Image (cartoon, rainbow, N blue to C red; front, side, top):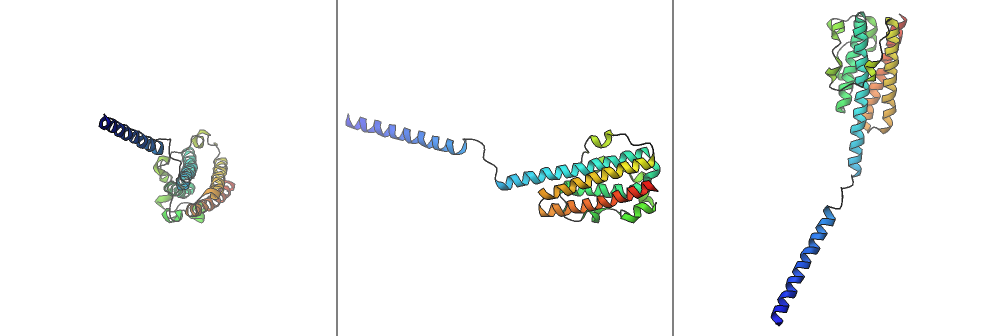
Length: 203
């Protein structure tokens, strides 16, 4: 009788220990989702910033294409600038590690766009579809009709370029150092492009 009671108590103790161990494991791993670390939050914020910045440039790229489609004779003036915006869009989407000007084709310089044709790269056919950048442009970029007057179309495009450059400049505050340098470079190029487009509209 005593031996049977001892065996029963041992069985109860073993069962209790198993229940406690199981409860401990459940509370440690199944009590809810793990809180994201500071590194996780920073990575998510940077990814979101890249998406917004790339989308802004892709939207501008779509606007270039709309103006070129409405006014093919402007191709010799706009093609180099459009190529530069395409390079910027790609670099921003990839979180580029260098100067986006390095990947832009020759003739994207500030004076080249104002001087007129510079060979095949400056022909109206150089304006490839905006989808080639790999980033989907936002809808408002192509929703606005292009002015029928070429000079007005250039002024409107210059305004869009300035708006995009301002957005990149504002994003500098939240960007990590390397991406901030890229944004600053793209914003500076945008300011130069806006000036050229405005001068072109006057001429």
